[in-house]
Image 1 (cartoon, one colour):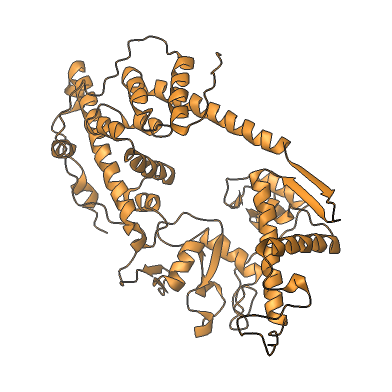
Image 2 (cartoon, rainbow, N blue to C red; image 1 turned 180 degrees about the horizontal axis):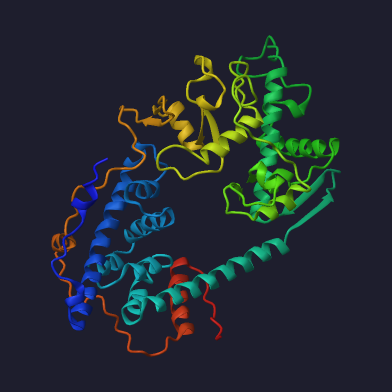
Length: 473
């Protein structure tokens, strides 16, 4: 690695901040802050364009936020927020313009884009210009809490109104009417759809082709003796049959709890010496979590299953050779302990990962630790269907290659030079000064009820919903 890359990128400071008088120090801070705001607007525009082109996928990354995390060193949460704000600015031209001129800080713009609509854009900009970032955050936070309360109230109404009624019609058939919350209704529909698909597959695999009558055309099938198995039954009738099938399956088996014990299983990694002695622990932590006190691990081990993991070789549970492509539980645990999640460069996923054979089992690969690696579902798919390849060197290092043969580096190279931020501001044609990003707030108290109420009225008018009052605190 080039050790001079970072030193070449470092800017040269001709003026020691300690020599600046306080007025010049304050002016330079505020001017630079406004310049950074302009550069941030440019950065967001570039991020939005990169995300629209989707070119981050050529490196095998799952999203533009993952690219920013991998390439620019931005934390994944902050990267996702930048992508969100970048796309939101496209629908808020006035907020984008204020950010581009350095008049609106990124903190204010980020908060505004969480709730703004084209109708409320002017209103929120007025509050942002006359208030601080704390005022904007407080307004947006209060508005979102009220929105959540209304959403929760609506969900509670749906839950309280759930009902099932049945009655017998005059002809003796039964009519069932059900009212469910949306998520419960979706669950019922999924079960009915699955039962209908199963019945169709079972019928198509068992039933013979209907015999053709002499005076019947090839396009007309002979009705089945069982109307429930008739392929010409309307969809509503097949769904009714599926509902009966779901009921039969439940009655034919014991009820199964919707909560599985595995969902609440907690895995703790602790070395054997720690469990045996009272000394300090070299390894004692919750899987994918923080450190644990050795005495706590010993207490938990009093009433828990203990699995021993060792560095075994040869024909051991960690090396089953060519006997099977399936990975034994012991090997899987050792693999998770070694890899700690997906090994693809830039990927932070450590849940829902698959064990991948570097040399495929069908091509003579063994099911052992040297030939296995953990990959998330996205990158596992890329290696099988996306054209990406993987090699393991003799020293154990993993090398991932793009479909075009280019190596995916674990740590991208830093830029060789960092342009002065003034060049970004000059290219945008924006003149900034120490006064550019100053708030117009003069110390007065914010009337939060009035501010939130005004925002509610604007957004309600946009959504076509009724107005509601905001109670004073």
